Picture 1 (cartoon, rainbow, N blue to C red):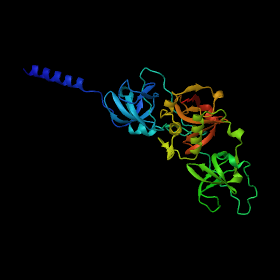
Picture 2: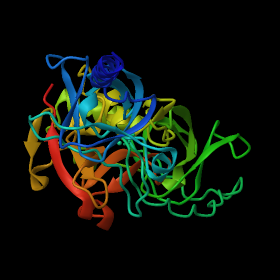
Picture 3: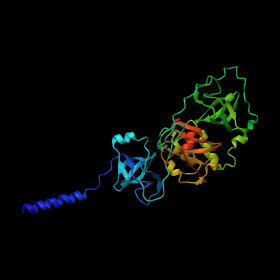
Picture 4: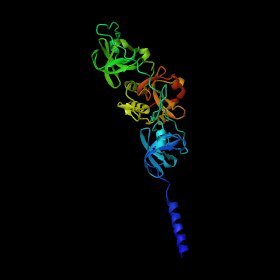
Length: 364
């Protein structure tokens, strides 16, 4: 009798063990264990694919739903297959550079990574991660402010020949030029601008240009601003309405602070800036850099036109980690983790040349 009872008990225990489900994933960080894992809008294979995450990508688990997990990746909430997510320990999580979702593959198209670079890498998950997780270089040391002329000493006063050409684009010719609240040397200083920065010039008041920059309207001493001629300003030649609108919005955002997951004038990450400029121009793009690379048409580097999107990989990987908006003349605007704000950089900079991935043209 006892032997029979022991057998029954053993069978019950075995049945219970077989019925216990796989260890559930807890809220926290997890790593993608497969290649090109789809990041979906819902917990279903029929749900829209928002992007693809590469093996090793780190995501934030918000909730375990069994076969699916609700996760946050690059500032966006969606769903990934639980089968391809591996829980990270506290120590492992601390070793990760940036909170960037990197899901596991479902046998489907290959994903596109998301970078966030600059001439002296430093991570970002835009991210661009970008987070859009994204890497970039350390910011260059800030130059000492360039002294403004004392009253009565402003000899060079660049006057605009055609007063009817405003608004137009101006380029700073000095470093640490003060951006003031009014056309006066005693007015409050909003910020300091360096040589090469572009601003939207609204008009001229005496020796000062009234400009728009960093989301504010203020004044720059005219001696340190060069107004672009029509030919130069049209290095964006046969630019369509969409490209023109996107570039104007991007230039108006120069100086806005970098904010991981940000997509508004209060702060941008790399893909957030692109998303905002296109959405404000009437075109809705995916929110992540890797997702944005799946839209539009591919463009060769030597055929870039103003308004095209340029993509970069995170150093040492083949995953897209950063995105910017090409503005012509070999320059692009992007939200930089290294500079901690929206800036203009040159495509032929060594960091950008090394990590260049490709370009896409959005046609609306």
